[in-house]
Length: 342
Length: 209
Image (cartoon, rainbow over all chains, first blue to last red; front, side, top):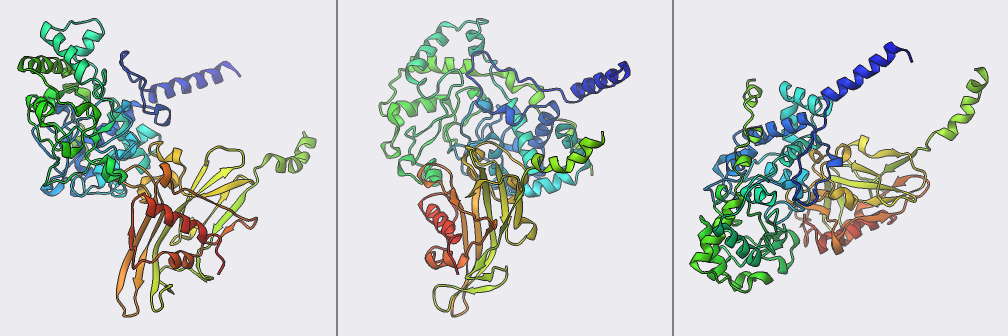
């Protein structure tokens, strides 16, 4: 091999590196190992950008009116603040509160009832649900294939412009994997960069004593399914996990949500019934319903004094991550507007 | 250089992979199963029309721990009624491997745009069978069977045998001799009913006309 040939090969290798650099997902040192199998969907900046465009694009809904972001807004930690139940196309109201989206790479199950095991595939549920985006993945693929800008973006992300269901779902998953919330005061305390106030420290102690078995730090959830004793809603009649497994013991079991970013994600619970954290703590103190067959840790009411409730809420506020919520890399991509000019 | 070139045709067979063709020929007691045709059902006077018959075949090579190939068969598309496998010794399974079920988005025959993935929960539909039942008085009622499930005791993945011809001949008449759409017109979620139908479906492949 002569020098010219070597230079050509070196140039091609360098070009490949520039065109297809891998995206290095920064994993918080105090988090456990990532559950998402990155080897099956290696992150790429252009695929992440494609996923971001898709996440915000109402083209994913049947009538092009509603996007994923309609119910998962970045400034609400990707929940839908002040909305009890999700809103879909045609002003249709769903059956559950839109869950906040962050730290998804550590979650083994998705949806309130844990119906989906794969971050990639869970997007099929909102795309096709008649009360959400009301469309189909086949329809989404056909629509995107007809858009020259999307074809170009698919080419940059995956090496060719052919749109497939697999690529759409993988791109959406890649964007969502970048939604990592680990910049709260709690995280800074864990990293030795900040200290709790006396009130927060007392709240942390109460948290470890009463809450950590289900809302395990540092993700602030064990992501298991449990009944937390909420009185069943006679209107929604949501049986939770039982709707998936058909097992009576799973009635009223829902996935334990993370307690991070609570100031941005109210109302709380799977049906958004509680507007405030005080109302949540009151439920655990005196609102547990035996009819909902609460799981073991909640069979004993949480007897907290008024001062203790204030301390616990003070600690929970240290889990707010404003850097995550206002991260512009997660916000609406202004270039998406050019995709709509057709 | 000439000698190695002359040897190439003799060496080539040892370098290539054996290709085995697998064909699927669904029938109704020996009659070709065409969409749009009515076939006599087990209940006298009733007849059945199959509109959708789509199912997965998995190839597990001898010595492999898992299925390495998944093929979607669709009786309305001739290009989906046969395929080649590079393996000469393998096991054929009806359905999608449980590892694939939880491995995220996949392409090709497993692309979710093909309508064989449950959107409301994890998992591929192993068998999608839809059609109409017409009773003696002319009334028509639809039936829909979306059979799947890969967890625990309701795992609907079934193994079937295949002979050297490479031809699979499921007899749909058998399925409707043990499954009565009058009593059970819809099964579209995993569970005991789906498991039972997956066992009937397996038996279709061994039932002779």
